[in-house]
Length: 94
Image (cartoon, rainbow, N blue to C red; front, side, top):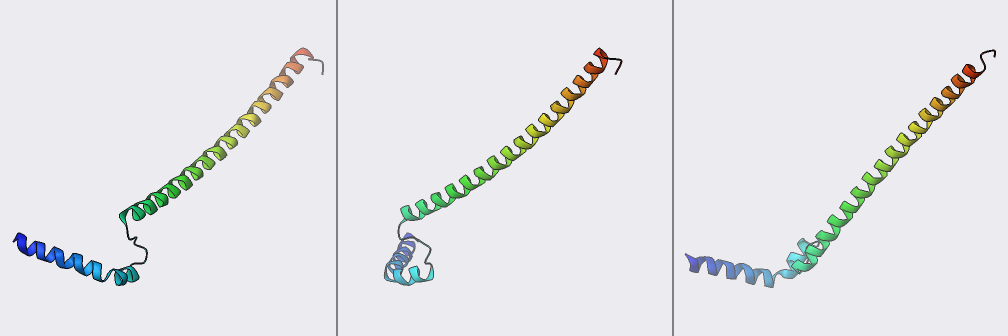
């Protein structure tokens, strides 16, 4: 049993070595070494992660700016209202 598996594995390895140029032609995006493939995968994942993080940060900043603007508007209106009330309270003749 192990002998058959060993022979089959040997045939597959030899076929891979003999036809590596054809395999590279069929699958041009695969790398010759595992390290290059892993490096490419890590770079791709890193780029996607950075892009996603940038989009989320920009979205959060936009939401914060909108909220701050609303707070500013509400507080300005509140202060103006209180000033008017105080002015009317101090000068009831007007």
